[in-house]
Image (cartoon, rainbow, N blue to C red; front, side, top):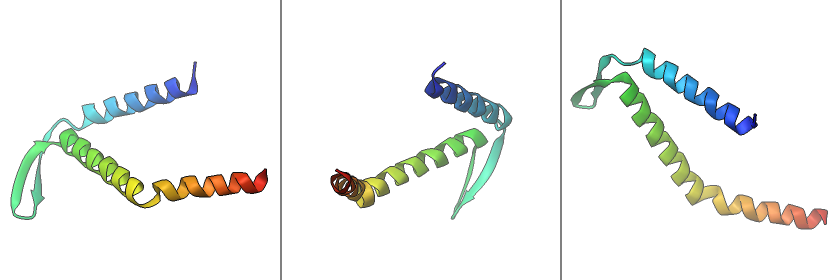
Length: 78
């Protein structure tokens, strides 16, 4: 089996376990609001916001700098 497929299966299994353990409704207090939602929905929203923030920061700050540095290193080696 390919390593990528094995990692995807492991991640999906872990996601399923976390989902089954966090199905109850919880109260979240955000500033002045009281929000009741399933824990897994809150976890999913938090992960999604984190990925989006990481993507935006990566694109705006370091995306092009890393590529230009790797080209300079390759030209020095050759």
